[in-house]
Length: 277
Image (cartoon, rainbow, N blue to C red; front, side):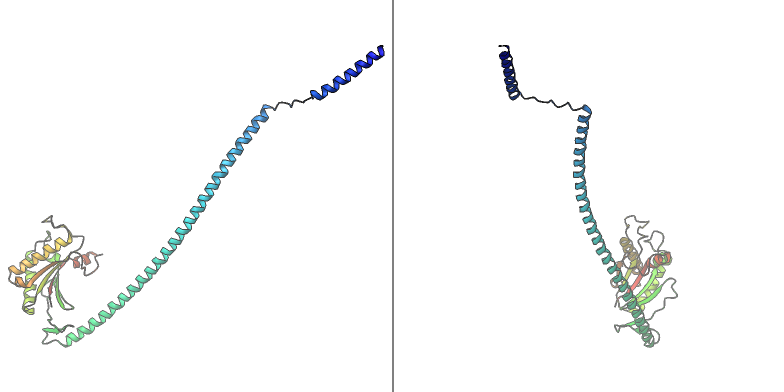
């Protein structure tokens, strides 16, 4: 009897053990992750995110640099074309200056030849023939200090420096200045008969303002006032009839020489008596 009881308990135990193993399997719980490792993993994730952002920013900068390089290449090409155009203009300017000098030399040669012909054709030392076949008196103004006579194509001109005939106000003739302009006008009238005459006034940008009249504040206005003053003195002396006389204020538009020196400025500040053809 005892034997059967022990056998029964063994069978039951085996059955219970087999059923228990099938219905409730054994599971192993993994160990918890240390806090230091979790913090390190989180930091690595942050570094990766920053690396991705920097890489994206670097790509954008690379694109911008490429664009700037293209713009720089275009600018260099534009500057190169500009330099080439400048060099071409500079060469053209040099060529034009050379041609101008050649023309001046040719003109001087022609003028010398013309003067030789004119000298040969003088009649009693009083007249000469100019290119347009007009008989022009050959006059001498050496007795009038500061007066200078010259032929200018179809015109005959007598110049006198403005500083020699105007006072410091720049628009009022001195007494000596009145005598000079009247003497010049009388000699021109007696030699050129019924010709028309013009008084031209010229100045420089440095002397723009009249001291006596503040409204005369430009070179143009100043030269008109000076030409008028000379014309009034000539008409008052009956040297040239009013109907045969005209005036022009040229301002600074017709310099005779360079204004870079004081002497050149004085020569350009002038009054010219012009005999019209």
